[in-house]
Image (cartoon, rainbow, N blue to C red; front, side):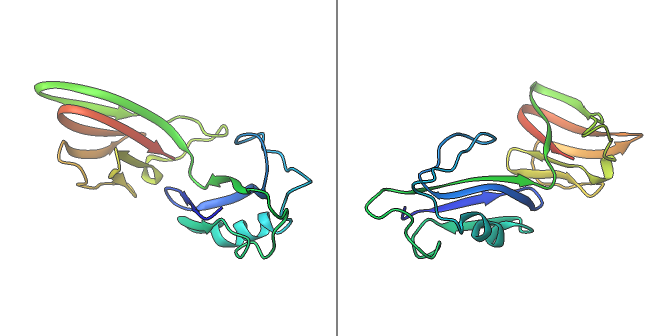
Length: 167
């Protein structure tokens, strides 16, 4: 109680399969409502605040959720959110000093389908370096990027990188 929960997705929050303000238990994928302390408005309120947005901030309070589901009990909000474009690949690489390297991101099936590279987003750390089929100059060490056939090729100089691919 008394804090805000922040939810962020690369593109948008597609769904919220679980939300409970009260004393829920479990972890993502296994959350359980505590029937003795659960605000029945939780799911609809969180869905209304978050679904279809890139990010949302949810105040964890009796005021936000319209009533106190269990007086004199410390409550919290557990939320399970699903992003529209899931993370499909991560890659940590170190390029030796004075060197240049080519990093290739090849297609990976997602639900037995291939998403074309024109729809991929690739980040290096928190910087976007490839989006909407084009190189984005978002990182000093990533010098160029292009689509080659069915994969994306990035040219990087010496340094350590942490890449995340969505789509």
